[in-house]
Image 1 (spheres, rainbow, N blue to C red):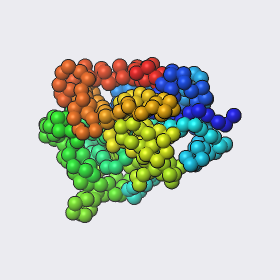
Image 2 (cartoon, rainbow, N blue to C red; image 1 turned 180 degrees about the vertical axis):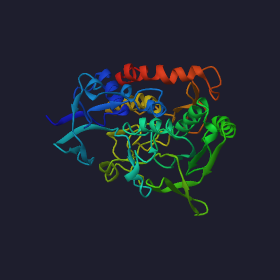
Image 3 (cartoon, one colour; image 1 turned 90 degrees about the vertical axis):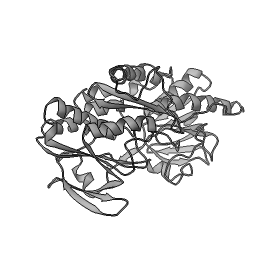
Image 4 (cartoon, rainbow, N blue to C red; image 1 turned 120 degrees about the vertical axis):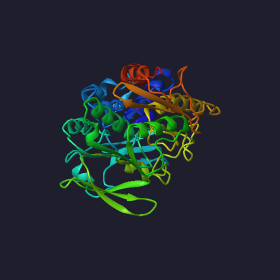
Length: 393
């Protein structure tokens, strides 16, 4: 009873999409998903929640409503992986598998800055990176009168590398529309260098930094938050200098990590990710194990768009391996980042492993576009719930 042809860990975008595609192919009969959560979330809209443009409730659906028909939902938590024995231990039972797909995503870690874990969600410290804290951003912003606004962006494992600046642009736009932009100083704090990694889009965003009067603090890291006194301490990673500044709003992006049962397993690399071939998505150590999404070692942006391109590659290669064939399907690192620059404008960045633009539309996507806003706000969520999670795109 506890043996499965395909066992999938994770009921997020990656796990559900992969399960649906495998089920649609019909080759494997016993498929199961290990996922403890009651609800499933469409996270790309949380940035709009953080600016009051949508209600957070529309980003949530019951998990049971997205589990593919014919796939067993094991509402349990994985606690140990034993790929040598083809088994997964949960908090309730042990399961054997013929093939394993690891799609757990990554989890926020608020402990990287002193005092942050205690003050996130209060004292004007907010984040669009969780369902619980996203709407607090707008609740805070609309009541601000003046002061320093900081928007942080760490390096390393990170969901949606565009979100840290999206909420900044949206907040800037909100302040301009309500005639109070001159009362605030906007600061973009990034541990790395540059507003964006792909030159075509970077040029446009650099110009927006100038036009919107954004002060940049590159090579800087948040190291301490004093919520009661509303101060934040930053460290310059090049000089080692530390500065403490008052804030009116501190938008924080957490550091992320994989689950402990992954990082301590023989599947993981030194970063704790599931080590896979970047093109076939097959484990480099255990050929009957595959991984996709945020927890995999694929060196691309951690986005839903990346998962949409990874899932068909993984499923095709899983079937090829099962049939003793060469794994010919290749993932090229495609990812997409719809950057909200105003409440009704989007710059749609699409690129591959090499940073080459791979654009879907017959016009320059490096320009702010109302059409791309409609695409982001309305079409993409519909495609997600009705097609992607059903394995149809």
